Image (cartoon, rainbow, N blue to C red; front, side, top):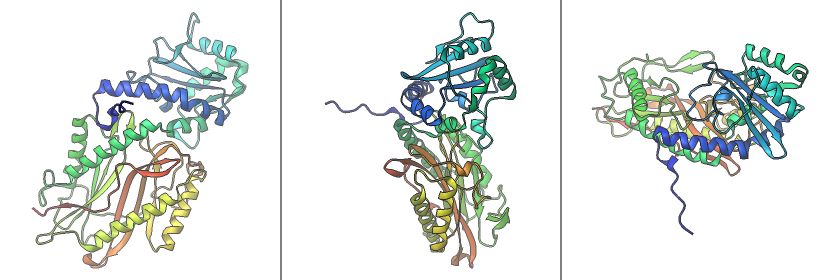
Length: 428
């Protein structure tokens, strides 16, 4: 048997044309292999996803061909579950990739939608309305009104498609998880480059300089950030400040990086229609130092321990709030002062799916935290630990960590590994 062809997504970022080919292939596979069971689980026979140009439903953009950068005028996608799988049809003035054209000689788009519904005869019609998830609440007020008017008596069959939309957005193909390994590796390489003498000159470079360097570097690579990168400083003599019930760094965002500083970097990139979200920590050596203070290194080890405690509780069938409570209970038993605020990640950075705390909601997140964890999902394992550091005169230091992980039937996998040692920046 000849060896398997190399996976092109292991080398990222790819040229845009190659990305488009891969994304369209993934979409076809998801429509064939993923969507039917999700529709069955949600009890929805017909899923209507509609949006207008520049006011797209977030779900709509995950169903469009890669060459469509937005909807065209009004675009209505009709996903009908039948014994043969899912029929994917589109009501649009333009061909929509893998979707069958469903607008023939009707005078309006909505008349075409009504004809399709009449012929399909669905018992339950899902539409994207949701109180708990903005990503599943993309049907605009106007489109909702026009749809109800067009459906007439069929409108009584409309039901929220929140469950279906969230599962569609959070479920990852095995091939997508392979790509996320590569994308996380890229994020790690760029961060290590940023937190090096090539970028940081102690006494000259500001934290804001590094943040903007990161944004420009990702843009130059063709892996645009999905949020403004941030670099925060902690230093001896500047204690943490309390904000909304938690302790956060107090050194200004535009302060000059000095020897002895602890740098915390937060970066998320975009490629292949996927996102990463990563935090890394670095220490700037003081003159005469050869390694970071033991207290800071130990604090990172505590953070790794907290990651282990959290991933041990991340089990399919539990809710996000149950995972949060169990992880915090384990931390308390281990004597760890920690906050946990992890979230799904995939086609969106703060993705749809169970919330495992917010940094300012450690008692559970109503609504989003009540959703159930499923396998074949990707997460940003995000948390922070705090502890007094002897070398800083007993000052409390916060170590924030964020690491991409995949949850599969085999358990948790770290995407390109996690940080277990501080990045070291020479004093000069």
